[in-house]
Amino acid sequence: MKYLIALDAGTTSVRAMLFDLKAQKFVYTAQSEIGQTYPQSGWVEEDGEEIFQKCQAALLDCVKAANGGTVLGVGIANQRETVLLWDRRTGKPVSPAVVWQCRRTSEFCKNIPKDMQARILEKTGLLCDAYFSASKIKWLLENTPNLQPLLKGEQLCAGTIDSFLIFRLTGNFITDHTNASRTMLFDVKNLRWDEELLAFFGVPKHILATPVPCTARLGETMIAGQSIQVAGCAGDQQAALLGQGCLHAGDAKATFGTGLFLLFPTGERFAPSKRGLLTTIAYTLFDKTVYTLEGSAFHAGSAVKWLRDGLGLLKTSAESEEIAESVKDSGRVYFVPAFTGLGVPHWDGDARGLFSGLTLATTRAHLVRAVLESIAFETKELCELLQAESGVPLCTLKCDGGASRNGFLMQFLADLLRIPIDRPTEPECTALGAALLCGLTLDVFKEGDFERIRTSEKIFTPAMAQDKADMLYKGYLNAVKRAILKP
Image (cartoon, rainbow, N blue to C red; front, side, top):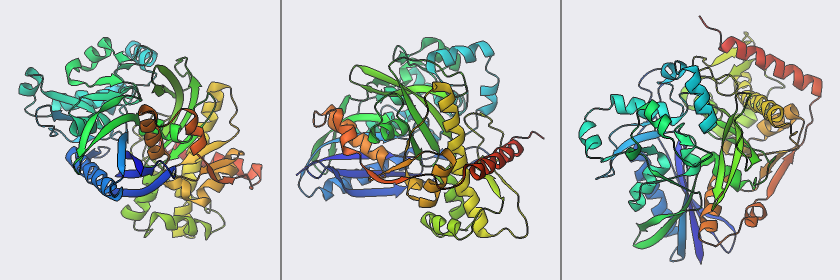
C-alpha cells in the first residue's frame, strides 16, 4: 500500500489526512484544535510551539494508520498571513504567532502614504491592511524583547506557518510562492522579495525564507523511524482551489472555514484589482505561474463557533442547520460578522459585529439563522465584485470547508446567487489540494488528475423567488452600513 499525507495547519485546528493512492481518497484523519488568545480588543494570537507539536502528533498518527504501508510524501497547506519569529539554532518560537485576523497594526496601515500604497498594490496585488504579514512582522521586530543578539548573529527567522513547519520538519528555511505572495513584501511578477518593501517595513531580508514553487521538494523528515519526503506546499485557500480542480481562468471556489475566501483564477497575466479585491498567486506549478482574484471575509465558520462557544446557543456547530430550519425566516434579524473588522470590499478594521432587527419575538433560532444567512450574504457581496472586475459571469460556484456541509447555508446561497452551488464529495478540499500537490511534485499525479479526482456530492439550485432574495440582501447591506458607522 502506498500513501500520501496532507498536513493542513489551519487557523483553529490542524489535521493530517492519509491519502490512499490505490483508493484515490482519504482513509484516515488525525485532528486537534488550536487555542487562540485575545490580549486586547482586536488582537489574536496563537502558540507556534503548540501548532508544531500538534502537527507532529497528527503526522505520527497517520504514519501509524498506514500500518506498514509506504508513505511517499507529506504535502503542506496552512493558514496564510499568520506570522511568528523563531530562533534559527533551536527552531523554538521567540514570539507569539500573530494571526491573520489580528488588527493590532491597523493604525499603522491606515497611515501608509498614498504613493507607497500604490507601489504596494502594483508590486504585490494587495491592499494596505493589517490582514497581511508585513506590518505584523514589523510590529514583532519592534515589540519582541531580546531580539538584537539573534538579529546581529543572523539567527532570527520570521515567517508564515508553512515556513515554520518546514523548518521544524526538515531543517530547511523555505516558503512557497503563494504564502510569500500574502506577506505584502513579495514581488508577485518577478517572484522575489522586494527590496523597496523590505526597507519600508524594516524587515531584513536574511530573516525571511527562500521562496520556491508550490511543486518544490522541501526536504525530508523522520516520522516513526521512516524518512519521508516533504514535497508540495500552498496556502490553504490556494490548496483548496487546486483540490476543487479550479485550474482554469473563470473557475471559482468558495471555502467556508474560519473565514470566507472566494478565489477566481485569471490566468498567467498579473493585473491588480481596481475594485478593492486582491490579486494574488493562485499557484506555481513548476515553471508556470497563475494568478487569481480573491475576495475574503474575516469571519464565517468562526461566527458559528462563537454561537457555540461564546454564547452557548449551540451544543455543536452541526446542529445550527436544524435550528435555522425550525423557523420560516430570520424574523428580519440580520447579523454582520465584523468581530475584527470587515474585509473586501469595505476594508474597515474598526467595524464591529452587529445584530439588528431584534424584537421581543426574536428567539435563539432567529439568531442562529441570521448568523448562517450572514455567511451567504458575504459570499454574494464578493461574487458581485468578482463578476464586475472580471467581466465574466459566474455559472456555478464550488464550495468547500466545514460550513459547506450545512445544507441550509448552501441552499440559501444558491437562492441568493441564482446559480448552482456545487458541493464536493470530499469536503476537505484544502487537504486534497495539498495531497495532489505532493503527488504532482513526486511524479505520482499529473495536472489532469486534479479535475478527475474531484467529484460532486450534491448540486444546490435556486428555489426562492428572486424578488424575495433581493429584498433580503438589501436588508443585509443596510445592516452593514450600521456596523461601520463611526462614533
